[in-house]
Image 1 (spheres, one colour):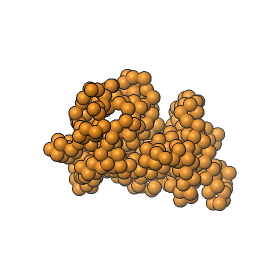
Image 2 (cartoon, helix red, strand yellow; image 1 turned 180 degrees about the vertical axis):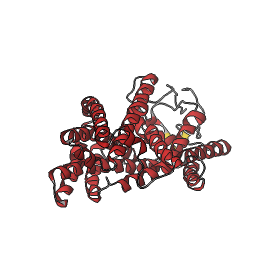
Image 3 (cartoon, one colour; image 1 turned 90 degrees about the vertical axis):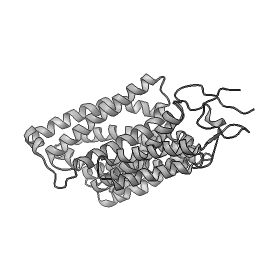
Image 4 (cartoon, helix red, strand yellow; image 1 turned 45 degrees about the vertical axis):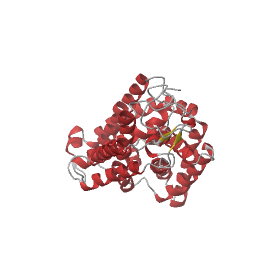
Length: 369
């Protein structure tokens, strides 16, 4: 008689794409996986193109050679991801302390050259967004990272405490610090182009070190995560082959200069309403429907192909974000999708997981027979 076993409370080795199978189904999970991969690809292209732009500005390259610099950046940064977690960890150990020190030095130099804290405090950009929109963009970005990318790396953690400590340090402390430094430097210099800001301060060598250490660390993680996600979508294609294909595609997309501020804000706006509904669905499925206990050994499980209710809840969450002006769009999207998904799954008794030859038995926990 077929059965499955719940062996642990948290499944560290489940990537975001694998987690989505429990709520979206085996085929349905490919939809958020592909969407997530393209978002990560966007970040990879933006950061690689920014580094190529840095090289072009410093050496005063023509548009043709700037394009070559951006292409080379896309390919070279990907080499660390191709080598796997060990190489990426080494880069992180070297780059993170260096990046923190350079961020502090850049902020202090910007304040000094820009006229002091009074200039920073009174700065007002030419184009503004509402407070709610700004907070929504930040929340959308954090929700995206916390619910998708983080899952791909937390699977290596030894315990719940390590996951919490890592996320608290990386997301709450370090990420907030870097965002704060960026805001201070931008206000003091009164421009958005990071390359121009650093060169304007005469920080040529620090600019190369800062962007190299920062971009290589995060971009290698982006590409690695894309490889993991698309491996679940195309299981017959090796992760290395997928990553090589993504590097080539990123090289082509970098030619459109995605580092410009309009492209970045456009991507952030899309993220803030597209990704949060996915987060709401996954959280409801894991914490409410499965009571924090997904079955072990996902390779032995048989899932229903598509969960139409999960897709409906996702689209509904996006619609809620677009239709409601009150509050934060990202939170509205997440809560709308989560509420609908919880209600409709409980009411329909839809069963997504089958076990052997038995009837589908999802959302109930059994012990091995």
